Length: 376
Image 1: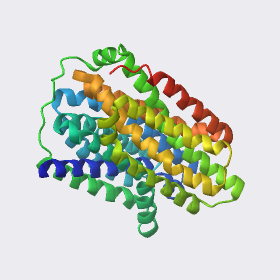
Image 2: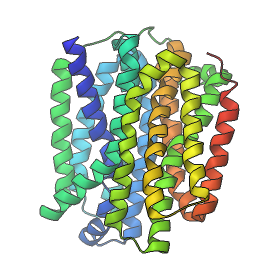
Image 3: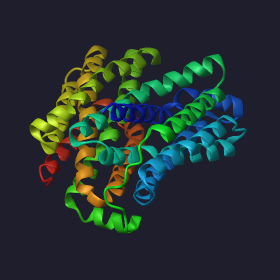
Image 4: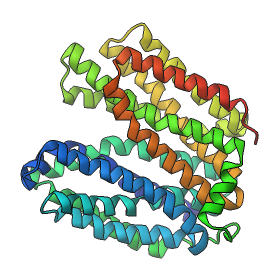
């Protein structure tokens, strides 16, 4: 039991520092642009390239872990992340920034799908949902922590040291994983290719429903927070520091994910999923009528609680439905999640905040309707 606790802690910490690098670029755009003598827009492209490469890594490493083992892929990803993250700090022009950032994103994409599949293979059922919930909770906190770390290190030392620091962290996590992560045999060794697994997955209507819901989750999370940032700045002249605190307040709701395991045991996977979907709709619906800064800050707590409930519920369902192609099924989940997330900022910038809220409510109402057809 003690060893499982340590393994869970190591996976959670690794997840936090992997996900943090999705957000480290956000406070650094101007610093990188000035240092490399490029425009802020060109620096922003570096973030988009990372997201695309990260999504490709999510899709690639899950099926690979079915063939060479979960622990091997986790360790391979961490040692590659050590090298490529350090290289980002050595970027000397626009092209090198894009190259190193894309390599970093691809390497870090190795962790989420493989770690989730590893949890299914290594942990007993009664602990599995809690560990999944804690890792996803860590992913949510990474959205704040990644920006806080990068802005703090840049203030004292310079933006390059952000990536040197993360490279050292990944090396340390690699060493810890090498010695302390147990080698767990894959439940059923894969004998099919990724394309065959994808064909099997796409023939399962319940998995398709799960992916439709998955697409909306990170899209809604990112578009909601980008939307409130623009809305509060334009309508109330609230500066970014206060908006950052409002976003941090919402993360109080992430602690709700700790109840996921108990809810699943009491109500089952599908009903727990429906509870999360209904809670998203209710928390967003309140903003149709009152949109003061105080109400937005307060209602972001149940909103994040609902999102943090949906992540482990979806992974639990997909992991069970995926069966022998679990690694591939969770890779498609991770890829779908990131694809939706990449569209979130575009949606927030294209729509006025009230229209954005109505659109997100409609999206989750559709998710509720299709989730009723889930067969477990």
